[in-house]
Image (cartoon, rainbow, N blue to C red):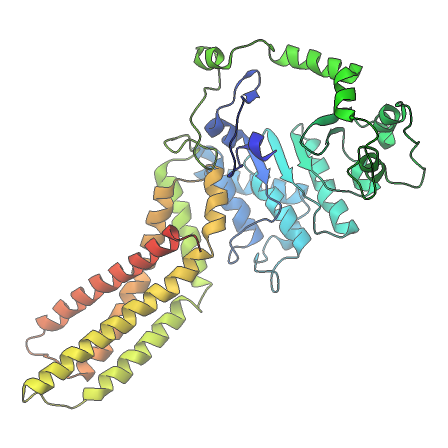
Length: 451
């Protein structure tokens, strides 16, 4: 599923992937599909509604982003479909203070659904959930399927209630070979009829989960032993023949991928893949660069405002350090070279302290956003340039206030020149340039280093 969705980041992908009978264009396919990760990653300081609003604004057409009424209508519709209306104003938070694991699962689905995808991929949507929460999540996926969208999900050992909710099943044995691909039928009757039709296969007991029974039959369950190669039997079956016939209608089996990719009538053109399955030079974003920057700036400003432990604490800590260091020479006089050297050392100390503090605080802060950035970039939510510029612009006013507090406290307490006043502003500018540079070095480390 990860290969089809373009989210496989390891190994080597061989072969050809077709979409609607034509070679799959990864960039365009990323815009018309939604990928629900197994463990959803969201901005902790955003509310549920804000998370949906951000995704909808940048993944739908530009006219939606520019019309607040349309944007609200889309978000409210998805909130209702995913049963999130009651928690729309709650912060996502972390696992201790925020949404429950099941609510995060539904939010992850909702963030993808607001982009109006034609197909939704769900990576183990029920993993880690108890029975009731799993049913709630599956009911939400059913609501999506009822709108006419295709929902593709991977599940590992689901209970019977969840298993019977699926319309079709693709069952793979160890090694990735297909052993069953058809409609499940009511209460999995098609699945049971198919495997029970083989000589030597025992009937599924009435009180046993068909999902557990089928794994035992093909040798994948606990204590299961594969009595025959069901992958070979599948290729001999009428089910396989019917599947090939359906594929022939959707896409000629003898078609040439290279030729098809070059035809003028092909709606999807082949593109090169980068490590994350999208064209690194693609400009196929749903919104303009200015719109991306506007919504990224808005989200970043809200996050900084709701994280006083980062911005406000930095101001308080560095202002306190500036006062302490400045008090060393309060009311002091400069009469010889030793006094000058002492103050030069003091300048070095304050610069080093503030610069290193900014580097050490920005690195973990930016690292906490890495997984979110990778998810949103893979969905073509925004460009990397817009993200980088927004991070810089939102940091600038905080650095300005920080430098102002430090320089004013340190400069005058240390007894530096005040008449004329221009050396003060000259020192302020130089200090500000250095702190900006230190902060951006921290940005560089956070994005360049893996851990």
